[in-house]
Image 1 (cartoon, rainbow, N blue to C red):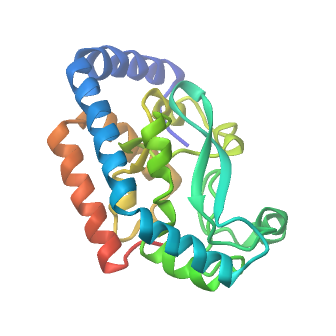
Image 2: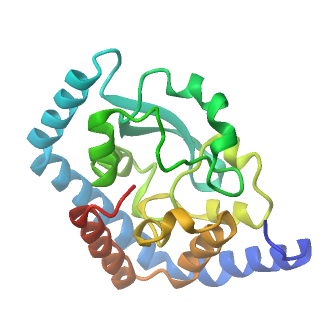
Length: 225
């Protein structure tokens, strides 16, 4: 967790709210307009491929819905329904406890490289980041943005210190600085949080566009996990 003192975190929070949020209202409005147009266009263009992916997931494992719905934490701690293509077996949550000792991530996040809960089609859609595409609906609804910190689970946020909670000051996104790192599985939880705070400070429209193109490159080259 962060080495900053409580007072330093409070000063950083005030600084972020004053200098990086309130003074960028034009950016916020433009960003929301872009989110609506981009997500709606992507849903229309990708509708048939998305249906095919859903069908393949059902054929591979017909014991559950192709769409996985989960509670995630958004801006200012608001909980919303998060959509994703199901890449794991139906009872994945029940199996989690038995795998905790194999966790390869630091902090409150759980992740192992060779997760036995992942299905055959799940491995492919994860590697290509196709599993994230249903979040276009979250973006259209306003729960998420195209670019922003990845939305966390409520049980993860419960373990956040005040520094990590700063990432909740803005709307979570489909992609972020962490998402486009080639070595992202080697990045510690603290480094991840630093990247999200850095994004809040550096946010610009052109910076967001650059992140989107980097994300497309990661998906096309199969660097996602």
